[in-house]
Image 1 (tube, rainbow, N blue to C red):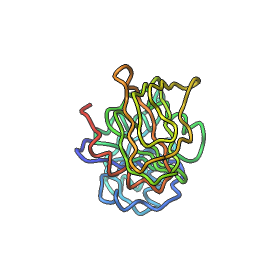
Image 2: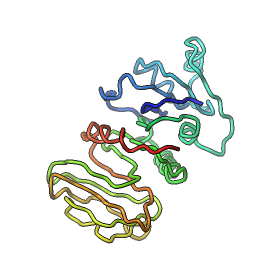
Image 3: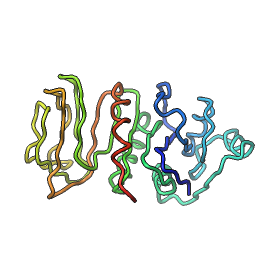
Image 4: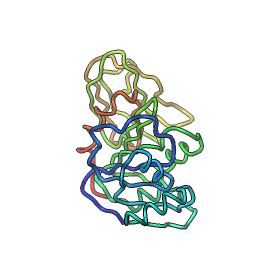
Length: 226
């Protein structure tokens, strides 16, 4: 188990096509299986290495040994490496690189884990085009008018109302296969989304990657104890 009261950066084995954001430099880093090779490529020494070790290269595993990086080999195949990381890394929140781009089945597995785990800690995924934040409670942010914003339910989510959105979420109940919130638009600079007490399920806020810093600044106050 790796435990910290800080936000942790999880580095996965998928593509990491952007430079590492300045805001996350200095935070604890966890290499998730093949993500250890990515860490090496970006000259990052992780604080922890976890996974079933079937994706990391032999040279990366040797690197972990030589640098005495604490490692957790979890051999079972019932969970993905991403799920293993969430299970064995206790942190204030998770910034995830190398999980949003690449293979579609891997991305679907990531979304499955987020829904399955019912995380009480925020998860922020950064990719080449988008940044995705797990919405666990009410949500507020300032954005330019006309900017795209998608609200995607994981399971059933009921909204009481929203402000600052072109398409209101007032009394909307979302569930995949019925109603989702792809490609909404910002109509006022201040956006807020208020959940109904009836059903406060997990949902995703999806924005352009250029708003990573904005979302990162929010997640420090979104955690609740596990």
